[in-house]
Image (cartoon, rainbow over all chains, first blue to last red; front, top):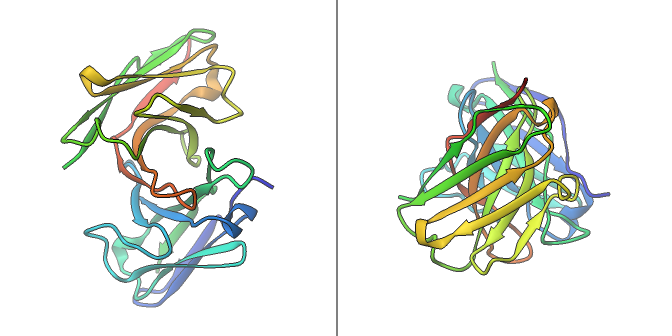
Length: 109
Length: 123
C-alpha cells in the first residue's frame, strides 16, 4: 500500500539510544529521508539516502533500512533532540509521487 | 545559503482559491536536478505533500489534491506558485515551500524549506 507508518510517540532517557521507525512498501525500493521539526518551526532534514547527514547535523543521528522498515537512530539523545520526526520516501506505485509518514513525537526524559 | 520565502493570502473564504508564491534566493533556482515543492501541515497534524514542479516545467501533484491544484513557475523572478481552488476549512494549514533534491529515483529529500505561512480558510 502507498503509505508510511510511524509510531506516534517514543520516549528516551537523556544520553540513551533511541530508534524511530518508518514502515511501508515503498521502502523496499527507495530510501527514507528523515526530518526533525521543533515546535513552531519548519522541518529540518537530518538523514537522507542510504545514511547521509546534511552539513551541521550531529553524527549522533544515523539511518538504516531493512526490508520495508527504515529507522532513524539517535545515539546519546540530548534534550534538544526532543521534537517531532517525519520520514518520507518516493511512492512505490509512482516514483514521481511523494509520501510522508504520520510523524513520531520524541520525548527525552 | 539558499533561502525560500512564502507569500500570499493568509485568509481565504470557503469555496475561493488559495494563492501562494515562493521566492527563492541564494542560488540554484536556474539549475536542473531540483523539484520545487509545496508541502502543508494542518494545525497539530502531520506533513502532506501537495506537489512539485521541475525547472523543465514538468509537474506532479498529490492525487488526492490533483483536481484542485495548479502549480507554476516564473524563472525570471525566481518564483514558483501554488493555487488551490474550492477551499474548505480542511485546507487550513501551514503551507511550506521546499527544495527537493532529485538525486535518483531511490530518494527525494527536501533539504531547504521556507519558514511556512499559516493559511486559514474561514468566512
